[in-house]
Image (cartoon, rainbow, N blue to C red; front, side):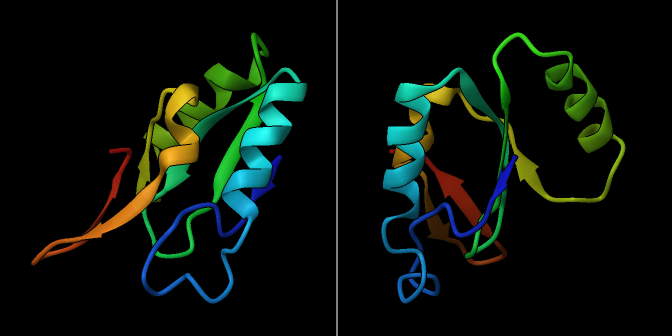
Amino acid sequence: MMLNDCCHSVMGTKQNLGVLEALGSFMKRTDFIPVAVTNTDWSDVILVRRNSRLVQLFDVALTNSDVPYVEIPHQLITAARVVYGAQRHNISFV
């Protein structure tokens, strides 16, 4: 499952309202975990069922792609926000 607009950012504040919070609530009630989040102002999060073979398949697919992504511990996803640096945007969980 892929969710869009799952990160708090300056650019995304007009459309990201509630998505990250809804994701946190969904994960508490299901066995889905995030496997990656794209590194953009309008971040996408890929969710798969815990202990699914898809966890390994997504790891291989993302490793061999040119998609900028960040691997994340599922416990930190609801704290995701974009931090703006001189050269590029980075995802932070602080």
